[in-house]
Length: 278
Ligand code: NAP
Image 1 (cartoon, protein in one colour):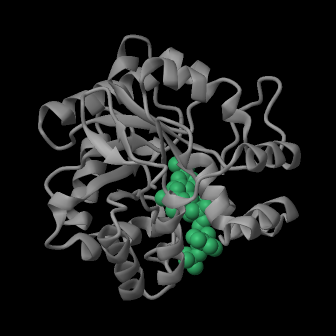
Image 2 (tube, rainbow, N blue to C red):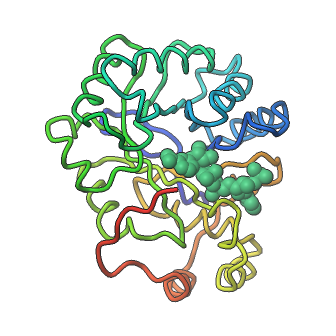
Image 3 (tube, protein in one colour):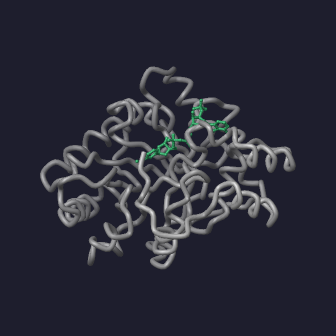
């Protein structure tokens, strides 16, 4: 059985809950291998691809272009604009550059990468203009806390998602941001869901649960975020074995006992915490 199915945006678009990230692609690694990993992910149904003009300073978008060549229609393509490019005058140019590197005419979702000095209302207006021009299907944000989302005011209903850090080691968003977005019917994108492959995956509690399921710690970490309705997880994997393992995590059903043990080892927040950002 597959735990994570599809996630619905308020405008009716639906996407699989498990997608793929691309940070650190298009840098010093083997670009062809990275593109092949993304293609394998597409074959396995992980059709949301998340990238950004920042990643490899355009290099990751070029890797994505190679991965999706000839299969644009299968992909829900997400990119992000630098805060310093998120103004009325600069956003359209940054978008054009992303579209060119990606080899596409339109993005499915364009995000403000994090909040900078450009007023949110100005970015929202610039986003609406490129929606009207057909260059993006919808827009959203990343690394915005509840107060920032509220500041969007009348633009908030058009904001399609907030992409935030969420994994077992960084659970602060469970206190307020996830319920807030759920209340709006706004999907949340969870970044770094396997803790960037770091110390999270060595934690004994995760290993014990993984052992019981014949799974890996990364699969348990992914299953934890995927079980929450309205969340799209975007693990990044350059190695084919990681891509396959991530796809298989959709079939991992955590039990009540597993969840209690995870709560004991990674306590959920009891009060508001400032939004954690990488
Ligand atoms: P992540 O997906 O949690 O971790 C990626 C690392 O974990 C890579 O080193 C990868 O190795 C490894 N890995 C992946 N699957 C694994 C598995 N099944 N078993 C063991 N190791 C595994 O971290 P992330 O890249 O920071 O976050 C995911 C994506 O979210 C990014 O790529 C990016 O698209 C997005 N993101 C957004 C923001 C933002 O500010 N909006 C910030 C951070 C990330 P290999 O690559 O060697 O396979």
